[in-house]
Length: 147
Image (cartoon, rainbow, N blue to C red; front, side):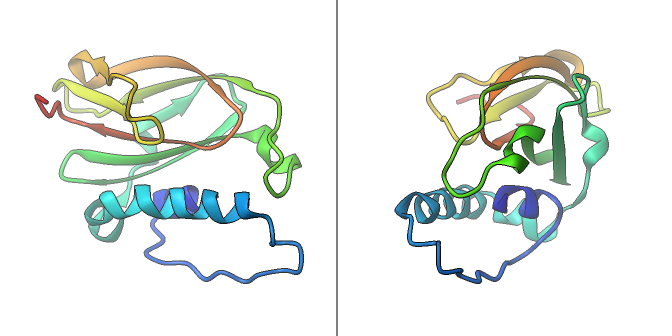
């Protein structure tokens, strides 16, 4: 959920530990979210809300976005994760989502949690994908880098 906070404009967070947070998996998830956010802190700190850039047509996930200079930091969480706590994962959800930069320019959708995946090329600044999610996905939707 930390990625959702950043994609909604939070520029920091406070961590309150309960007696059941001795699970190393919770700390690993926190470290992963902070690591991803740190790479895109300029968007998170200086950007503005941009939820209009995405639309969840399957209706079973929450998407949030913040944008700066045509680059969008996006978090997408399946609704099913709200019923699970700690490091328990819900069953996978099929999520249909569309991205639209509104500019008509070519864009790429990069998975920030799995950098081994090639970016999805979005011609005309638009693309639709079907995702299988059991946790929050984090994306960068931006002009092609040419890398």
